[in-house]
Length: 510
Image (cartoon, rainbow, N blue to C red; front, side, top):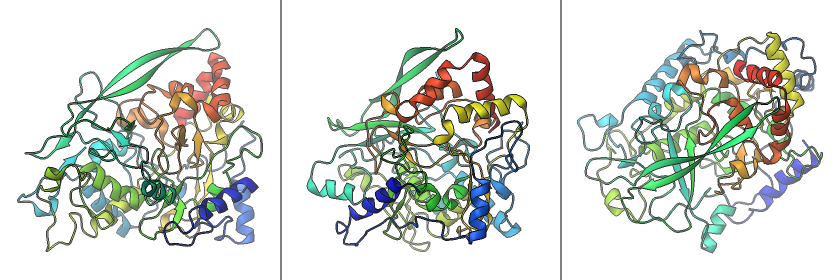
């Protein structure tokens, strides 16, 4: 851990002391690995050192998710297999969770009481509708209506001292748009107007590459149409988001906080141009200030919280963690709040009572990372060397050994290869959405994990990448990088066509 990272962790906690009535002086995270013996620490340090020999694959490199890696055939179901080291009993729990993940919720009242509660406003009727085959969302094609596997986030700048204090204390990550809330819902139950629809326009930008090649990028602009509840605030901030792939989430949660803190360098103390920052998040269950790990801007601390927020925001289903039965209906949408809810007294006080959230969380945490392919291929190894030489590995940190004290046994003490530091990085003007959320500014994004990325087309039938799906292939995704990644991006631009092909072969092998 750099001195700057330690100072940031301490100051971040101290800055919010007293604003929530909770005295905080540090993050609720140890700065060093407190789960390892001295012998284990030495082993972990040795095995996670950056690669230096690119003539052969590293030991265990193909097992991206450690013992949890799926060794099934890499076909259209490659993202949907359980952690390979799950017990028989846990596999049963996984498949029950899978059933709930796929379940279509219905509006209230209905004859299927256990599935009541959809909406009243919503983006999808099931988790699987956004995370198709547990994979990556995409922008709508020319023959598609709506943005089924993506959504439009909304917020406004704080306008009162109370809103500023809530943001500073991380009791909220953003101030919702007064009428339409935190995201635009383009579906509604019968008898209720939808909030609106989203259309996307594209501007094409040509980029010259070394070797006489060119690439064409497309810059998206979202248009909101058919607003159902009046105009939006003039100062509304919007951001398109595609659904993230679901694989390896439990393993990311099992990375020890100290290993994330160790990579943080907010003031660029080492002068390498990379200044990753910790994302801070308040855990709604414990109330403590902790590390955000999930979502495009790392605003969510756990898979359980992420699942509960998706149930509420995307489907309009209340859980023990997010208990509003009306989901995203704002105070300005009283007609929405007055619609029937799916709460059944005999089942509990929310529409998805225990153990539904726990089962979906377990399923989400145990979707296995597929085994890598072609790790010994000479072109893949050359591409790996170029990945390191270009500086990509500075943010897309290749490997970790997970905590011995991870919540789930199957995730403990595993050598994993996610290719992320889970930190926030300034990605420059090209990728800026101008919408701050939690710790993240309007120019910052969490380093996206790269494991499994080479199977996107196999599973989801497309190769759209980045937060809004603007990149149509991996090369375009690289070329959109800026800010802290500008030097790495420029190195790729100046590579020979053969080198770029090798780099892409490496990425496709992940």
